[in-house]
Image 1 (cartoon, rainbow, N blue to C red):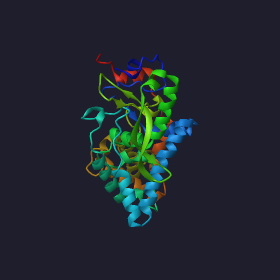
Image 2 (image 1 turned 90 degrees about the vertical axis):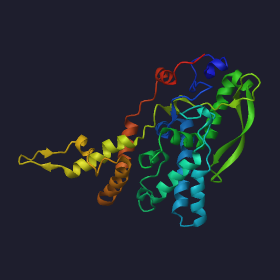
Image 3 (image 1 turned 60 degrees about the vertical axis):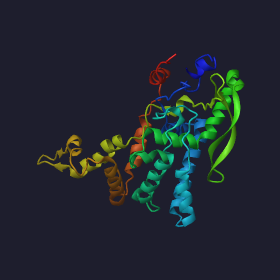
Image 4 (image 1 turned 60 degrees about the horizontal axis):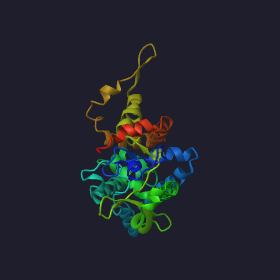
Length: 314
């Protein structure tokens, strides 16, 4: 059953009308939030400020040269808990989360610590949404989970606004203790927040955190494969271009380049070529891709969201 059905709310609504009893195939996308923030959306500006502030603080601690700061940077990634409240994403254990946040956090930590794009004198990899381009096993679910946990307060504020507009949500509200990122202290903390709870029969229910439609997409728009196919192989193609006797360029096909052993491993090549182009040409290949993603952004329509969520079982 959907939120609107469970709480008897008339459509249309501003939030993603998720199924309350299962996972939903949409993801909170930080690059979508970035797009709306850059275009003056007040809620998105607050949410993206939190996202970017988190990664800025992570990098500051990573670069400080202090062992305590390095431990704090590591803990920022290892201590977040997968959010269950939005019902977004896909998990082998339903919307209760897969319980692998510490493992994933460790993978991100090791990769970023050793990544040449994440050093003080280069700092190309400087946004949360950049991570999947360079870190193995980090894709839609993981970045969506971390983003959701980071902006939990902003999503709670959005949910509070919806509770004010829809009395049945407010009537089902209870206090609960939730993990949030506190930008002032630079720590994960527990905070008491009032959210609507979804209850069936006599069970104690599960908290519901509503998400604005503009914050989600069918997949993360920052894709390691699209970056590899576009900017990265494009840079290789430029380097290997020769010119015929008539002065016309002879370019190797990206399709052929992608089959070659030295170019077919996408994330390692993403790292090495992005680093090489910066050192050699003082050019930020990643920023070019970010701009391409923003220029091509089209928000999901209500019809696309409905199709992605699928019909209710009841």
